[in-house]
Length: 301
Image (tube, rainbow, N blue to C red):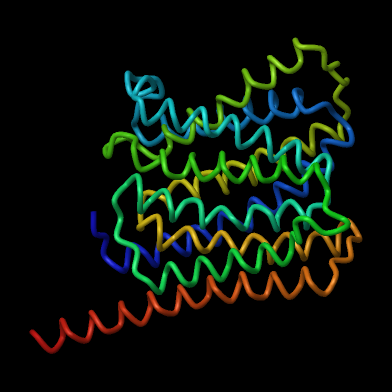
């Protein structure tokens, strides 16, 4: 399916906005992981976020529960949501924010490969090049096989796979399905996942005022980011929008340094610059192509 270039640019803007919210969400997750077990965090986030999305769905005049819940695309998306979210929460609890964010920068490569092989989207050589260069930047950040590699980083890698599958599955849901309903299903699935973890042996921690405030902030930024990324993946081509996941690294590095006192080394900064540069190049190519199409239309008219 071919999308207008204006749709691709809208999708790109939504993706960058989503990454800013997700970086803030990562910050709150690290804080929450210090005060509460993972199951409790997932249960509260899924319940609160799911409720907010359900209300927004109803305000738009749509039913919340329909037969679409059993659609294969929706089921696949919800399963990928559960796996990806569980792994990213675990990664943030066990590793530095900057490291987790760096590994997640490989997501666009996985999504682009999936879009080309599974969804049949056309990916030009410039997009392939930009995405591959961005992945090289991620490898520089990770430095796999060298001293200092953290095995817990594998949780972040698993999260990357889950998030890529979620984004690809978003394109498989029924075309007329409201974005708010999709978001309601995905977010709500976190609640039973958290309940299972609690029943498996994790202890519930009494909620203090600070904990409730932290969860409220997490739900707010989570809902905003979740809606933005869902809309982004439905508006533009996956291969055009996905490279802008790299912007999450910029926001994450800022929070890691100024909030958590992390000090990324020179190689991390170099790799980040390469990854972000590749994403910006892809955006500029898309904007130039849009400008050329507009000029051709004017000439033809």
